[in-house]
Amino acid sequence: MAAKKSASGSGGVKASSGRLSGGGRVRAKVPVSLGERSYNVELGSDWLTTIGRRVSGRLAAERIALVTVPTVARRYAPMLTRGLTAKGSRVRRIVVPDGDASKNLAQLGKLYDRFLDHGLDRGSAVVTLGGGVAGDLGGFAAASFLRGIPFAQVPTTVLAMVDASIGGKTGVNLAQGKNLVGAFHQPRGVYIDVATLRSLPRRERAAGAAELIKAAAIWDADFFDWLESRIEAFLDLDPKVVLPALERACAIKAEVVSRDEREGGLRRLLNFGHTLAHAIEKHARYRGVLHGEAVAIGMVFAADRSEALGFAPAGTCDRLTNLLERAGLPTRPADRPRSAYLSAIAVDKKKQGGKIHFVVLDGIGSSSTAALRPQDILPVGWSA
Ligand SMILES: NC(=O)c1ccc[n+]([C@@H]2O[C@H](COP(=O)([O-])OP(=O)(O)OC[C@H]3O[C@@H](n4cnc5c(N)ncnc54)[C@H](O)[C@@H]3O)[C@@H](O)[C@H]2O)c1
Ligand SMILES: [Zn+2]
Image (cartoon, rainbow, N blue to C red; front, side, top):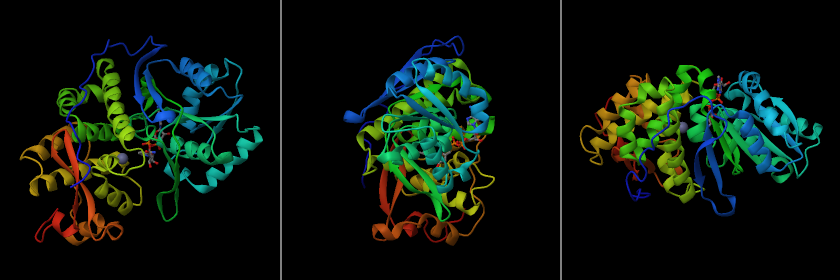
């Protein structure tokens, strides 16, 4: 067994003043400690213009490319740009089409063209505004343009806030598969305005909440308890719940990434539920199922197997399933034969001597990876 988490529940959740509006200032800061590449995740509410000023101060760039998507650009780019330009930076807004299909080499090429068009040089910077698609694409453009220029992330989905924007993974998809080309490029800062979540569809909020629940399940039993009495309030964007929940989930991701920047061991724990999730998404051709929804099903599967294999005490899977169901997430895998599941979880076993690093729960709030053969995870006679 490897990558055992050292202590369970290192943080707990901080109390919140309960104000979601009338912001304009930073309300919480989460450090991502990576030596000279360290940065903060800063959270607040109704403070996009202030974010713009802070980002431009941090990047100190004469020219900035603002990479975003249509829905988000319309609503939030003007306020952010007002702040970005306040200290004299020249900002070019670049809007890429919505959806994961935009995370490709063709869009990347267009971004480089627009960067050159705007006169970006080594003293320039990129700011991404949107969900994980804008962040991954814009981040990879920043990682590769002129061998890398600085960038900052302004995530506007729950998923991007607690997961995609933190940790420096950037990249694009190829026709052959997701995220096959990319680079590690840490942002100079991540700036969250929770008020942007008001326009995010509830289904997208729930899908992002799956990653939040994942963070609690693998790392922090107290946070999981706390969420159990507040998940509906989170989805309703109750101000007393949203900011502290996001702050705690960001802190977990930041801690894992700080201890394992390049996925040598600990960072694998973040893949809890993802082996099956990737297979589900692939099988659906990435249509009709959101990533977080596939992760919810994958986590229940992994928790069930954790119990069956003797890692987690009885009842662990039920608790996780209940919380996910209350968030409106799917939890049941499709009724397919064992052979289909075997091949789904065995996708990358060849690289690891016939065994896969399967992330198991040792209980709510604690996880580890176990090197297992697919047939150990799914014994003969298993059915979905
Ligand atoms: N880099 C990483 O470590 C990492 C981690 C997890 C996921 N990802 C990537 O993130 C992507 C998924 O991210 P996502 O779930 O944020 O998807 P997304 O970026 O496609 O956003 C989801 C939808 O919400 C819309 N939207 C975004 N913010 C909004 C707002 N505030 N109001 C209204 N609509 C809004 C978008 O236009 C889009 O239609 C995938 O490409 C995935 O591979 C990356
Ligand atoms: Zn995920």
